[in-house]
Length: 235
Image (cartoon, rainbow, N blue to C red; front, top):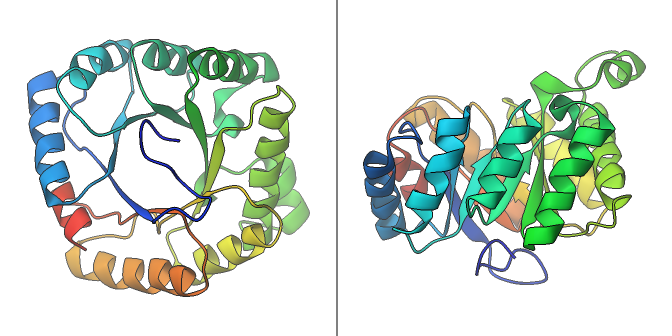
């Protein structure tokens, strides 16, 4: 569950987007979220680059009615602060959060608050040993990184997990999700990262996400465009 939206388990594929306003600007962020919801967005993600953004989540949550996901990179303290401020889910990459102790602190907080975690693996941030093993950023390397993170988080007796694997090229993205879906029943968040401007982004997203959905792979989706995120929801 992401807030009140079920993900996986045969439920309908939910549509996500991400705000591009400064999260600490509560009014601008809430206004954009309302526009996203009116366009059909069912789950929204906000960036949490600093403590001001984490603290703003409480005020944002009070004014919106769709689930809010906090996007965290590098600093586990921001994840904990965002969770305590009322985020419905956290998006983290355990590979850039740091030590096992820091990851465990985030997971324990999520468990205490009964919220879910998305493990977000990006092609640009794989572990060095995995890159060396696979001689670069391959689909197999992305899957190995994701499964390593899944096992780490499950080792803390936490199971409210979904996974995303994102590369900026369609072929590698599709191969990675196909490989991962054969190895886990966890819900999958599907998208092509850095898909680009309107036309290239629409084409790459339609090919990547459409191919995977046709395969029966994917439980929640996000089209990524470098423009007004309402266009993402329309696509």
